[in-house]
View (cartoon, rainbow, N blue to C red):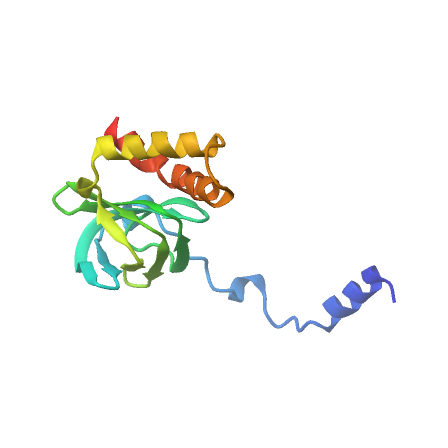
Length: 169
């Protein structure tokens, strides 16, 4: 049986009890709906809770699928985080930034956001001079002045450092 005939047979076998009018309408969300509420944020590390059910306006995360901004009423999802900066925009309008080693962000219905990471540090804990020095050292190692393992580690450092260094310039 060829593919076209198989599709016709399958289509004919489908019950036609549903008309277009009986389908549920699609729910659409507008920008005004998305920013009307707060996000209930929990940001947890194994040894500490940085935010525990705290209302915030927006959270920007470094997801593996790309940088994301999460507002209230965001579609539920689970995102793997790559090492990078998480920016939290608070109700007061200020923002806090944390460098996370990776982890997961889970958006649940009701504007609930949970971020779990193994390591995380406030950006305030980093010295701009130390970060620039570390980048310079990693660049020297990747140019061939180290073992294969040292070069691999230096390449990883260079992948992780750029988001931090741009904030110090």
